[in-house]
Image (cartoon, rainbow, N blue to C red):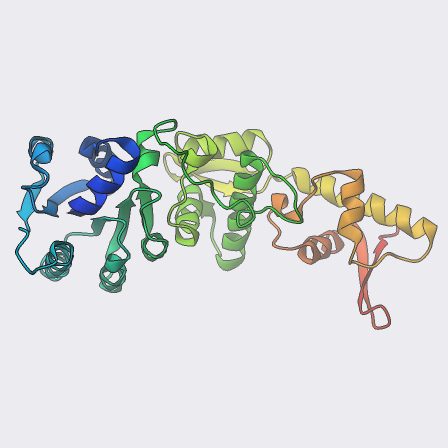
Length: 343
């Protein structure tokens, strides 16, 4: 049985409570505590604030066994900075004194905590951030190993205005095309699987793909695409023929590969060969540039990214390696010319 992660929680309570109040009426600590308890054992639980200003939260924090660190407001002193400094000093001190703590949670949306997060990671600690969407600095999530938005923990339909949408172009949209959520996540998974296979000698496990996605985007969550759990997402992609799953060394963590029959890849190579052959009959072998648009005339929405390829050139080279087409460089055209492989 794998050993549980041991977690230390540090809450910049004023930042979190005010951000939640502006969007969700009141901060529910239970939602955040449930999400963290699913990730490991909460060893340390501390929240920092002037509790005279948040006295109505005391009972809730006590019920969750959260230690309330008093940072009183003093004349001539900036309360916010005092709480930030106290939290940062305590977190670094604990990281040096308690080697057994493996995960630090910094609950705040303030970019001032970015240096703290980076230092904790430098000390070989995994860092999870928690913040309220809309009041979280763009700098902080990218510094963390994982970032949880409070509104997403609450579930859909709880925020006004609606949560910020993920950047579709970053996730795979190209040339103005509109892609569905399932197409976006399919591309993310296949591209990541392809990259891991190139960089590793052994099998790729499902958990490795999830960790790689979080390294690329710490705010990633399969819930954004309509799935309750990562395993549910992977099983859905298997049914669609995007990936193949085989039992792995640990139960619930299957080995992931591309379908042995090529899945959609073989069909896409056939499409490429057919289009190239048709263009050749009109004249000379077609150049690589513009060829993708010709494929889309036959199959609107075609993208090599759905098959795990980073670019169209890589896709055509793969088709050439498997005998579907031939490629040759043409100095005059300053481009590859693609021809159908003779039967």
